[in-house]
Image (cartoon, rainbow, N blue to C red; front, side, top):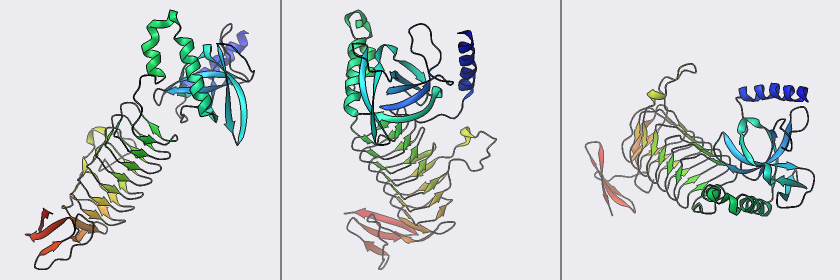
Length: 341
């Protein structure tokens, strides 16, 4: 027995030093280096002391609350039989409710399938009832928060493959699609859309009605006002002179995208600039200085070749005057005067 514990201690040292971790989400079956325990506690199996665990609640990118599983089918108040799928096959397993605990993400080795949504809801309810017996009444507030009994339902949509950190505000009717990550202390407005593989934050503010296409990272230092369009794979920066071996978090430059501007596909915006309201940046441009409101910009580096209206269409002037369905426009000393209809 002593050798078993010594072997586990060596593995535990390696786990503690681990840097790279895997992403997890609720309902996942995760194989965890659960270790060598004492007495009736559930042990890991094999040389790496692995055991499957169902993820009940993700607290942060570092911690989650899980329930170990056993392949033996058991009945009773302390157990819950669940069904999970992997590679289009279904398997049955038993969740050991009394062995539930908090796990560090470093313990996770790999994921293998997800349990059925109906089983997941029943599992939460079974554990909720077990932990809220009369003798555990003082823990009710904690348990209710943990299992969403009193939480207000999200009024936004986030695909199950996306990851939302703690301390994030997301407005109603906003949609966050596949493989996106919203980092802490980020504020996102109403009616926004984030495509696949987007990263936002930390400490980023995004207004209402913003459309963010696929493969975009909005870094700390960037602020996006209402109704901005960000085209596929456009790029922000936040440091003028980056070095891999120098930390320059205190040198982030603010980049501001003002209301209604549009940024084309594959545009690069060098940090520290302001894009004026309703400006339009053509695909592939590199913006390295401030852009006037309503300016039409193209090229590397970007240069102004005209003006656009609120509609996004190029304005055609007659005697320095133009209009579209939204406003009247007049050129005055190389600037545009706008009177909305």
